[in-house]
Length: 56
Image 1 (cartoon, one colour):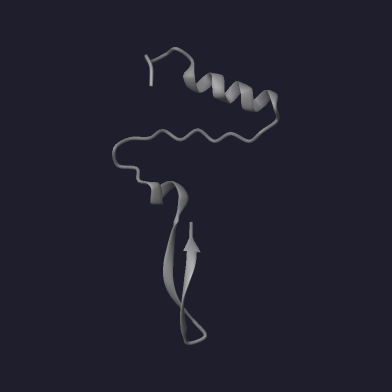
Image 2 (cartoon, one colour):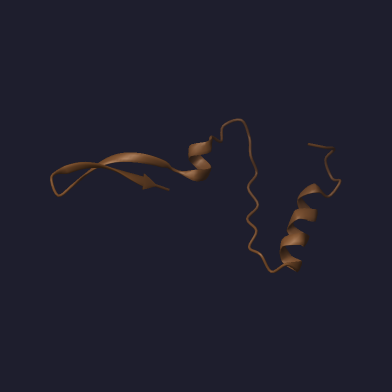
């Protein structure tokens, strides 16, 4: 939260760059859900058996 153009995102990107950490910028809106970002468990059929499997 905060005003536009104050460097909130740039600050995080600069810290990650200086620590040599990967950083991915994701712009969120009201249509993005947790499942879109993380993934979910799905029921799949493998070798004739139903199992749960994580899907990205």
